Amino acid sequence: YNNMKLSEDTLLRRLKTIGNKEIHIKNAIAYVEQLDRHAPRLTVQETFDFAFQCKSGGSHAEGRPFKDDEAREAIAKLDEEDTRVKLFLEGLGLLHVGNTFVGNSDVRGVSGGQRRRVTVGEMLQFEAPIFCGDEISTGLDAASTYDICFQLNYFTKVMNTTRLISLLQPSPETVGLFDEVILLSDGKLIYAGPLSEVEDYFASLGYRAPDTMDVADFLQMLSTPDGAALFHPPEESIRSEPFTTSELADAFRHSQFGQQIQHDLTREWDAEWVQKKKTSIVDSATSLFTSTKSDVSTDSITRESLIKDGALTIPLQQQYQNSFAISTYLNVKRNLTIWLRDKRFLIANLVKNIIMGISVGSVFYQ
Image (cartoon, rainbow, N blue to C red; front, top):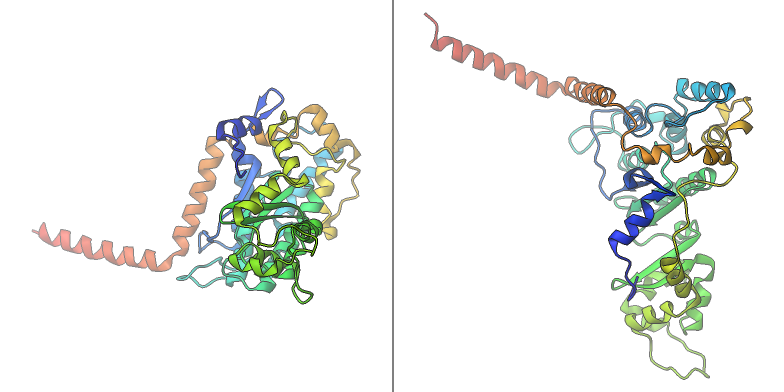
């Protein structure tokens, strides 16, 4: 953070503990990279299901011990109906292509925009408190980027989690979906705070957007050398020259937003990897999938009761959600399915083996 540094060891030490318990940070953070890396001959639903089986242990309970009979029945119903997979298939607009190959440049499958949604949905198949997306708009048009960000924003609010998304030249409509914005210029932080206050903050420094310019274009221009054209200080201002990037970073560091960040970095870590909002696991999972809403009362499995029992942190404490045998079975089944569907590979290997068999056999014939 500009001139203030937080060592990696200090950061990880703060993140890896819940009280006296250690967590696996990889289970707490879901990450979507710029490129779509999938098995092209698996369907969209199979891709989601494999991620769910691996990261959630194949159950919506995700390793949490539910003692209440109603709660166990509700979880069993969700598992039977494969609710989480269907939830995100419908929420991401992929339900109609659920049985279509994901595909790639060589295998015909879903479109590029749909494949990007598959990448996002795959990382939503487990309850990670933090979701990070690295330029998820790569290769997408403005409309597709807006749709994905809108859906992520909706899931975030329903499931009470955090999303951190980096975008390259987003549209004004997409920017408007975010609660906060982080603005970088030449690798320096020049603003991090509420989107609703960003224009007032830069106006206090003398930067004002023309009436015909939206917030998204204003921020993108401001972070480049062209941002100097936006500097229009009031007449009573003692400064007549635009700020350099270093000066903008220094000004932010001394602002109320920068001071708050510095305070948060230096104060004792007292956060926990749990959600303290009274929202049940079942209700969170089914609120988006209204057609499968259960009449089962879920008051007995509120998150506060889970926190009290220490159950919410269990998926973060376990490195793997499945045993070695189950993990081996899932991977063998997945790779066997991919292998059997690659007909060109099978035919080529069959022909090759027949030719080699005849060649080698003829050498030893009589």
